[in-house]
Length: 264
Ligand code: NAP
Image (tube, rainbow, N blue to C red):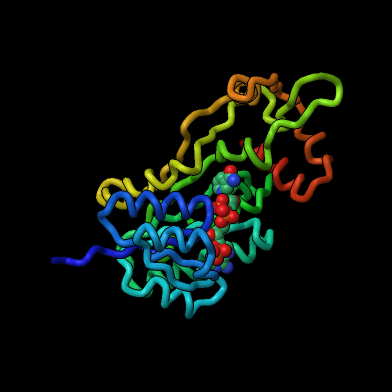
């Protein structure tokens, strides 16, 4: 009996990496090595129950990344900008994994990257949580790691959390406060990212060396509001906020997100 090849999954206790780990386990072609700083995390234990090997690893610690990736055929990497809110930290972590993957000779890495908006716009617009991932993606290509990058659009799940409808102050309805004007915004369920990554890993000849832009649907904010109205049974409207007003809302990262909407 030949043993299955191993895919090392960073971020496996999180939303994207969790979706990836589950889909790979369901595919039964590969073994999943779930990497986490906390091997007793309930999501880590749930993955263990599903058949994953759970190992300790910290993206800020090269020796632990090397130990976590050693012997693997491939890897999935997502870095979390929002923990630390630092492009510098995100770039450090991404490049560290790229160097280790190169040194250990991994055969297929799927990296959850994004567009380097700063480079694309010649420095006119900066979206740090995009730019850092873009920089890491360029680094992966430059050192010759066999890689597929995926660009994940806005999670539909954001409408249940950070973008949930707000109660209007002047009537019996709710609003979505996202400054997209009349432009459609790409989205997908993050729960579907895993199936995509599993397909990519199953078809290296088709996907190695490529960037795959993901989107399930691109809807205007009013169209997203219509979907929510139908499901919630309460009226939801596009608040029609301008990007200038949005960035002055004063919540943490308002400017960073305003720039993301400018890019969208
Ligand atoms: P999440 O659910 O918060 O999960 C974060 C994961 O990162 C956890 O599994 C955590 O593992 C791991 N992690 C963080 N720091 C680590 C470290 N130092 N060492 C090892 N693991 C570490 O986040 P997510 O949504 O899956 O991914 C976040 C990323 O998605 C962000 O960078 C964001 O820009 C990107 N993104 C988000 C959207 C969206 O619409 N929300 C769309 C596209 C891209 P442990 O805590 O178990 O160690």
